[in-house]
Image (cartoon, rainbow, N blue to C red; front, side, top):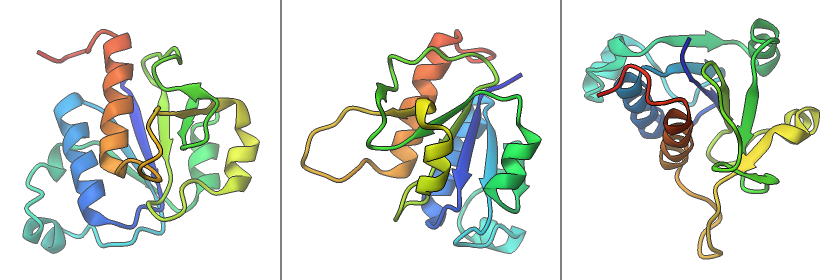
Amino acid sequence: MALNIVLHEPLIPANTGNIARTCAATGTRLHLIEPLGFSTDDKYLKRAGLDYWHAVDITYYSSFADFAAKHSDGRLFFIETNGDTYHSDAQYRDGDFFVFGKETTGIPQEIIMQYSGQVIRIPMGDATRSLNLSNTAAVVLYEALRQVGYPNMK
């Protein structure tokens, strides 16, 4: 098993690249829900310097419904600025999924409403609307990795 990061319709290639690098470094699976705001073909990735892309276990989905159908038995956590639970208060297990929304609008409200008890947040002050997507993913992922004992990491 492994932890899983899910990006719902990501727009900014640098954020997805940073998250992919974090996934490669931690053995975390990356799930990308289309449409993507960028191309992931080999030519584009090489030009962007993403030489670790081959080391990431990536699965693509045509929609959130496609993703949800394929992982109906998985534990999903949705990360939003208005979540009821701090990311550090949730109890994680190997195999959990962390779902992040697109940089401009977050996770669609119809999805949040379906999973209202599974929305978490990172505490922060009022100076900004939110943290950067790749920073948020790293903060949440490393808390989960800490809780499950940093499997297969030095």
